[in-house]
Amino acid sequence: MHSNKYIFIYSVVMVLIVAVALTVVAIQLKPAQENNIRIEKMQNILTSVNIVTTPKDAETIYKKVIISNLVTDSKGTEISGVDAFSVDLAAEMKKPEADRKYPVYLARLDNGDTCFVFQLRGKGLWGPIWGYISLRSDMNSISGVMFDHKSETPGLGAEISTPAFMGQFKEKQIFDAQGNFTSVQVMKGGAPEGDVHAVDAISGGTITSKGVEHMIHDCLLGYEAFIKKHNSTKP
Image (cartoon, rainbow, N blue to C red; front, side, top):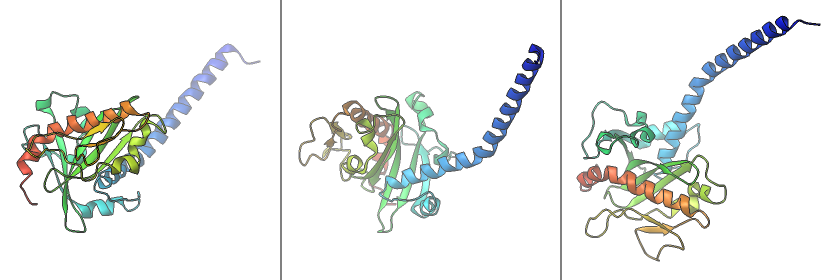
C-alpha cells in the first residue's frame, strides 16, 4: 500500500503534467482560433451587404468587396492611424461617448453600388447581442443587416439572427423626410404597413427585439455626425 506522501507527490506530478499539456495545446490552437474569429468577422460584415460566404472563400471575397475602412469619433472626425478591423466595439461602448472609436467599412458591390457598413453592439435578454448594418450611398436607406447573439432563447430571442427577421430591415430608412434621425423601431404586434421606420418584433421575443432596436439606435447615434457629413458624398 502506498503511503500518503507517495499519493500526494503522484497527484502533484499528474496535475503539473496535465496543466503543462493543456497549456501547450492552448498555445498551439490559439493562432487557429484567432484566425477563425477573424474570418467570422469578415463573414458578418459581408452578410450585412447581402453577400453569403463560407469560411473558405470569405477572405477572398472580403478583400474584393471591402475597398477601404476607417475609424471615426462621435463628432464624425476620422481618427488616423487606427485599423477599423482591430477596434473592439464592446470595449468602446463602455467608454464615455467622446472617447469612443467607431469602425466604418466601405463596400463596393458587383452591380457598382457602394455601401457604408457600421458595427453594432447591444444587450439582449440573456447576454450581449451584436451585428452590422449597411447603408446605401444616400446614407439613409438600409441595404442589409447582420445580427447575432451569445445566449438568447432558441425559437424566441435567438430568431434575431434568422434571415426572416433580418430581411425586414432592407430598404428601411434611418432619417425622416425632414432629415431627423429616427432609426428603426422593432414593434410588438407588427409594424404598420408601409412604415419605412419600423419592422415586426419577434413573437415571444419582445425583450430581445427591443434590444436590437436600442442597439441600432444607440450605435447609429454615435455614427450620426459621420453619416450626415457623408450623406451627399458619392464614393
